[in-house]
Image 1 (cartoon, rainbow, N blue to C red):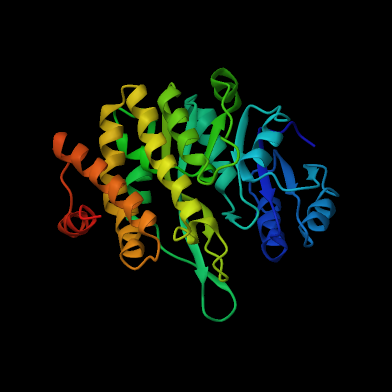
Image 2: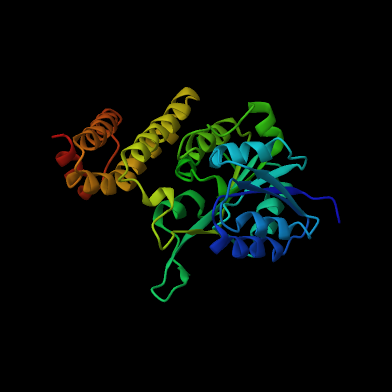
Length: 319
């Protein structure tokens, strides 16, 4: 096997229904010089067996964890084993597009930047027992289209809206220099990590190519589908605030403004709609507090919001 250029970290827990498709998307990459570290995070279904079978291909390595410690801990365990110049992430229920690694690693190799960010789409249930890929959403397009090479947060603050771990490739040296790891025991653990990478990067590349298809599970079991749960909401709000705090601490004012606007326009509306009918008064108070906090900041910094967001903001200020 040729010397691998990038390590793809693939954590999974009880995702046997989807893991084969994720692994096949790696095997089908047009760029073959990769390795993958699979982390079975205490699965009780056939995920571990599927991961073990994949190691017949020497590019795959398996870490088995007898009990689940969560997505962040699984990623961190694999990060300790990375010995390639670049690192990427793929959740075991998602799918890489065929040219994803070629485009992402090729871009970084050509430019010398620290991080490259690509676009992604949702895989949603198609009503016939399968999944269909949707369109690139506006906030994803704003972060990655058009292509920008060797840019920065100052020059392109909208890249701060791409906060997922798995739509980018970054230099391992940057992770080592920052001592960067995912915060364990929490949901939405990738938001703060993404902002730290952006803030510390010497240069950032963005490409409009769709590199990942992100699955919205038909059974509603994805974390992003459970924002009506108070414990999930608490971590979600902490992650939103924490990402902004990273940008503030790095004096990235334009990126922080862009992030506040995007949260108010994209994250807040569904939370307000859930809160309006939620049985837990604490849920409403938590959402209301976030809305008031970010709305006050938007006013102070003259951040223009769309009219629909203004209406929801008015409702939430009463909680």
